[in-house]
Length: 240
Image (tube, rainbow, N blue to C red):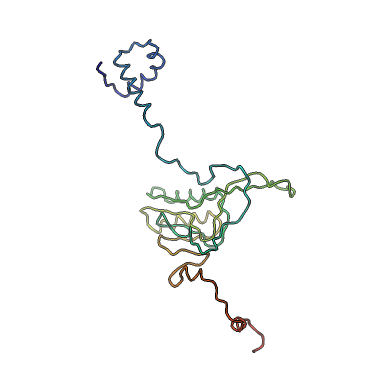
């Protein structure tokens, strides 16, 4: 039997009634039309029902939820001489914390992202986030006595160490426009921030590894000076 090619709109319209009438033998459609509909329906079922596009990652809340209460903790400070997370990796410009480590709430991070998007509205760019709000903050109500547990869940926050890159941006934009966008975002967040470019030297603690300062020199243990040298640095009221 020769199959008949039908328009897609007509096929989609008749596929709904196939399971109700055609499969039960109560349809008045020709056999060629029914066979074509069955073939196209089978081909649609055999297609992949999933997408290879990755789902959007929610960086303002962990996927696991708050199953157990997190401790307050402190931002991780790498004492072994690591400069991880202090340079721009994916974008061309970045926003880096420069004063002190702290805990950034997810709401303030979202406000900073919205401020950047509002300033760069209509531009072609891509924004990267280098932090993740995966620490739960638990609080008690006002005028509550001490004890009686840790408290109930309040919000998600991110522990950001000093000299850590928070946002990165890449696109065909002028540097002054990106500076202004990051300035607005830094004003929305607690702390002090600085504007960095791709290729800027990394930071170990609060010391920038620039020309004349290498990682090997900073990892080298301190030289113990003689007693007479260290004692000579102590101020005295009378001459020796």
